[in-house]
Image (cartoon, rainbow, N blue to C red; front, side, top):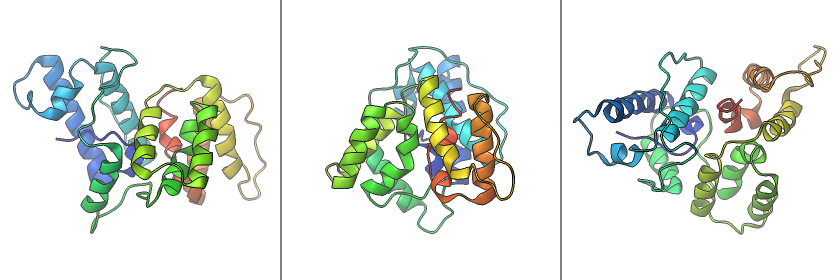
Amino acid sequence: MRIWDINPGYLNRQSLLGEHRELHGIASIILNNKKGYSQHPETIRWVGYGWALEIRHKQLACEMALRGYTDRSPVNMQSSGGVWPPQYIDEPGRQYQLLREKYKDKGKGRIPLPLNPQQLWSQHKYSVLARDQKLYREIGRDAASGNRGFSELATLLTDTLRIAPTEGGIRNALQHMWGHVSLDGHQKTPDVNGWSLKELLTEIQKRARKNNEPYLIASTALSDLMVWP
């Protein structure tokens, strides 16, 4: 039983659907006071953190939708709104290592597993930009100079992506992402200024997949920002 903490874009198909199934199992144990797996460390750490478990489910569902799967089983849990479990079973940096070992001869996720802090940062840039521009600039400088190690950065990014972005922050990040796909062959570029956040991100997703735009396909924001509008 495993609920990963890193962005679900790194999970392959089997792990993504497997976590979705196991998350529903944990939610059922907590909501219905079931005995099975009630003492499992993964179950224990989510007790009292229903809101966070619901958000993790939304993260999974948005990544599943990006890959063509439909989720018809929402999780409705509201305890401890805005608060996440304080402990990781495995630190985020270790989770990337575990997936690398797990996927050695298997299919990979949408986002390539990062090999260094610079690649890890490039994959999370727009998700961070949507939440904290000051931190975005700070991490960018550190990544360029090599002042932040992989494990430290992995934890910082995972913690940051647990923070709800503002509407203005999301729109700012989406405008940057739109720049990668706004020119689509000979089609006239639409005026997206009046579009809702969901409409704009949906169009970005569609164009990124259609053109296999490498930077966005490897971006956590492509599904992460759909959790919040």
